[in-house]
Amino acid sequence: MSTETKTKTASQTKGKKKGKAGKVILCILGVIVLFVAVTALISVIGNSANMKKALSFPKVEYESQLVPEKDAHGNFTFTADRDLKVLQLTDVHIGGGWMCLKKDAMALNAVAAMVTAEKPDLVIVTGDVGYPVPFQAGTFNNKASAKIFAALMDQLGVYWTLAFGNHDTEAYSYFSREKMADFYETDDYKYCLFQSGPEEIDGYGNQIIALKNSTGAVSQLLYVLDSHSYTGGDYLGILWKYDNLHQNQIDWYAETLKTYQEENEAVYGKMGLDKIPMLKSCLFFHIPLTEFKDAWYEYVDNGFQDTENVKYVYGAAGEGKKVVYCGIGDDNLFETVQELGSTQGIFCGHDHLNNFSLEYKGVRLTYGRSVDYLAYPGIYKLGSQRGCTVITYAPDGSMTVTPESYYQEKYTSFYAKEDVTMQEETMLSELPTE
Image (tube, rainbow, N blue to C red; front, top):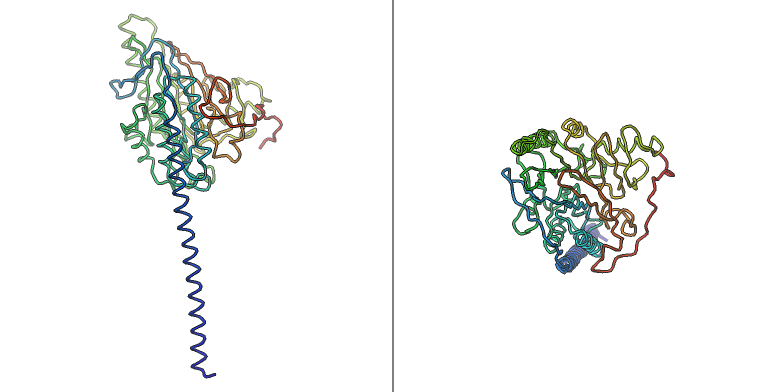
């Protein structure tokens, strides 16, 4: 065979190999495109079904529902001379994708059952309405879950707001925190009281909701704050490096508290009161303060017994004997709270299996019970942590805090409740210390 013939044959062989490789690549690309198209279609159909379910629940029946109005500062205000009920929900974790449609439906059912039974004046969600994590939810679209939840709350006819959590706007999500804030602040949802907050303050959703009596005095300020997301270069949240409240948020809290206190003093002055009561307040946000960890660790290290600083109220650290995923930085929010002497309670979410409530240095620190069916592997099969927290504010500003399990008979579900294992609610003293 001549050299020319050999070269021609080799060239033809290479051409055939390239042709085969090209066909393989095209086939792979075709399969990928087909997979994306099919899963997208399933997501659309499934989310439409869950939206239909969200709109199928009846409105909550109130004897006399309070309607909030904006005060001179532009903050929503509830006025009444009776107890006011606030329902804390946290970590609802609606995925909004093809991989979690059944679990999303479970979450909707749980929220509807608890809200309907409690008939709260206000619902505050302390973060993670959505969970657009693609390998569990099957989507990057964080607005899909928000639409379903907002539609549910509007259908129930209950006033509500939320603090953003770390999962509501992941780095890879389609919509930023700013865009999601715009979504929640739209007039499309009559009962959503979300406000983006002052532009000069870090984060989105820093807002105040005031509880007032007929004298014109404010009995309670409810601060809903953005505790941000990841920090320290942990953009994807795989290193558990969580942010803290920022200083300008803390300064805003202190300044606005002073303003409302001064206004109260003017009201009480006209009433001829000699002793002006301190205005009470509570804080709601997603990621727990480091003081949650400090308080729990002190309690554990003392053999699960109260200390001079820590008074146990209820609950357990279901994440582990010493597991509290707080912010990794330093902030002076708790020190400011102590200095001002107004804030009686701080409520957070984030750690789905932690549901303890402690009094630490005179301030009540409380984990809300989570709704989550999705984020933790196998959590949809567990029930002890799932529920809500009922906070009742009396006209004098005092409060009572009650944890409630979703699996009580009083929470009648409109669709069948799932079977779960009620894991032991203990102090977890059998677990090794980290």
